[in-house]
Image 1 (cartoon, helix red, strand yellow):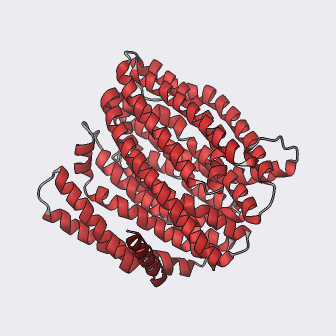
Image 2 (spheres, one colour):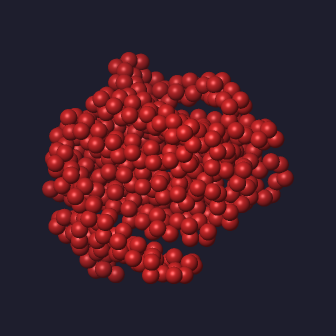
Image 3 (cartoon, rainbow, N blue to C red):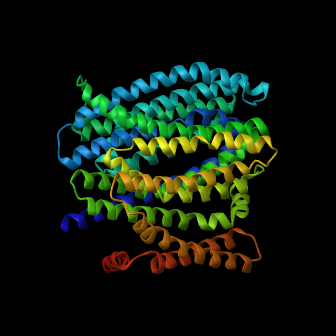
Length: 509
């Protein structure tokens, strides 16, 4: 019991640390987006989104490899075994191999596609090529950095993770102002500066890990068993990542071909808003996931399932809590945030948030399957279903539908994916579909319905759009949502835990 209490405290502490980091990053990132859009303009921002995004979206591969590496490192730590250094060496070799393969693809097929197929004005094609090359090498540096990030998360050293992220986002804010000091093409310069930031952050990760974790000392591993095991797991995970890449960047390209770079700018802003809120959920799951994997490695399946159900519910509540005011007040927020708002931005943001909110329900389910290492059927089924997004979007756009319909298609597919994922995971490990529905779905639905009714009623009562009414609306909505989550979304044990935390904080003061 004491170990469970200690684990819960560690999860809460790490989540709090990551939230402080996210609040700083969120404020800085949103301000940076506003300034960069003002400095480089909508057309260049659209080019950055389509060209830089063509490479940046492959960061999903990097994230996939982090998840794969983290799974094995965390599993070894949970067993108190001594093979973590071998798995780190194998992970580094695999990441370098992936980087070389992708570099060849980027410099051949990718370069051809950029110059002959994308809808970019001829006078901006040189700048687009410069940005493309900088984005490639930025991506490759991030790929090689992935094993270091996996070690930090596996050891649950979230304070270091938070500090490094804050340094990174602060440097990105600095380079925005540096753009004003130079007369050369600012789109090209922005890509070069981002590359330098990635190099600097890569060295920080390496220095920290080498100083604190002995397994981060690289060794050459000859035993092919390690490679086969990790490549098999990563390969299946990679298949799922590739399907996500095609459904995301493929839709981006379709929007470019049918509507031009202005719509890409709108999609880029929507993705930034979605990513900003998703950071809060990722902070929670980043703190939670190592405990799920370690519990499985230690044979404590009951505690692992408890974390899985609560992880799904809490992830949804976190996203819903932060996104509800934005969903209702999107036009007002954009008018305050941006000097010029591209067409479709409002509806893109709203659909993006709803889709991302739906996906939060399955975060912990995926981690649960990853902990077992048995992800073959999960990756294949989800990947194949997700691949259908691209042809379906092409069909609806070719029929003359509006740009936002691609989000409707994605929403339907993601809704199907939730139930498919739940069904498959229930066969991999003892995840009861009925328990999931009673502990998660039936808990979140009343909160969603009541919160939306309260928030929409408040919105109708407020007749003046201003910064101060936005602050009042946000605070009132968040308070009402928090109360509803406490009384309708939490069970008695969760309410008791929250009560103890509040009393503990009050006693300290």
